[in-house]
Length: 488
Image (cartoon, rainbow, N blue to C red; front, side, top):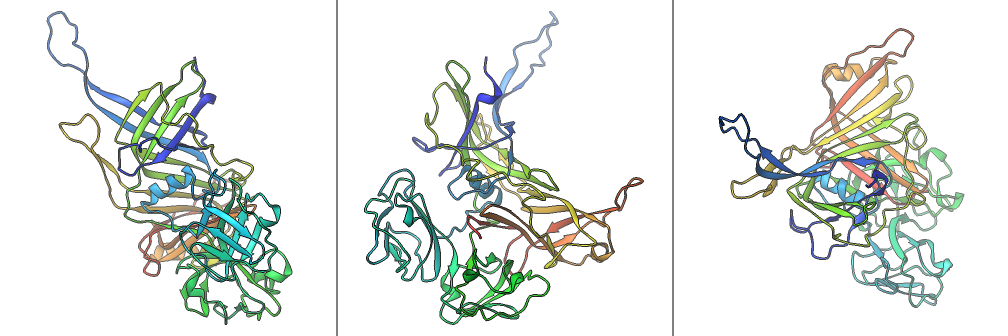
């Protein structure tokens, strides 16, 4: 006998669709439950027999696929959850520069030198002046925290006079991740249309149009005196000395930032694209005396649905289509990487963690508060099958689609008027738990069809609006997801 509480689900990204990498490094996934299944397909014989019996069913093929149900938490860059989102989007996220010793001390981050404030790393995406780098997992406690880059580089960066101490062999869990940028004293100011700088060059930081940022850090020294400026906004234009922003809160104003070293946080960004991303998944029945392992290969996310409901956990389902599979009593990886911990990556929920919902660049608030959001994304995938192959030989891709149903209180006719007129608009919302934040953004959407207004006696009149995404000229995307690993 075995038990569902002893089922382990792990996965690895494939280089070649349908082929598991050699000696794969498998990663575990936090799941509520799943319906992944690798099964043989049969047809019954229809031969006529005078004994009223039937011949054996004929095996005609094999098929892999099914749903994975999850409670949403922040999808760190190296997690299997991030891989599922990337497979859904048909794109790799554009990550901020990072280095990670990833379990082996002194391997990627190789030294911290106190006398010069230098952190030595292996080559990769460059750190630049003004970047705000978050250090975690270093063996010397003083080397953990936020550090502003004063001299950049691809193999080292300098954060001079910021309290770094010597660490000749940084610990196995040492990690350095760009989480934002920080200006010098009074350099970053708030203008009528966004942010400005004199010394800091905004074009060097890796920012892109359409990206969401969070202005202001913890403590008066790192934020504007005008409280409402310390908020979440979206970039619409970038020059060396100016960021033009939209989705600004009502009452946005100017602030010289006198005496302030303003911090601004940004993160990894994912927009829909054209890259097929497949995974191999292994389901292990660990309660058996000798565990059985079922492998499914060429698994691509076809559709997903996530629900954001007041005072409920954010939950969702990824539906995958696969190519082939197998079963065995030998695991692909007997010691897979553990899934991100609940303590470090808490489950997010509506009400408790859901932030401002914006429609058309302004907050959806009284009298049209949002009761719930249901996000649906699809890729219209299909299995490509051949007469000389038992399983699928490829995955065909269709058109990308994204929509969100916003259940709103029917307080006035603002949304109804847009729905009837077919006026293009936008919708975005964010979730933040602790220091981790995610923004989902449909930058161009139409409310369709005209919503029905109903309600039983003694209930609120609700206006359910379906926002259907279409291509946005500013960002070149249908749908975007900004993932900020650290915000204050």
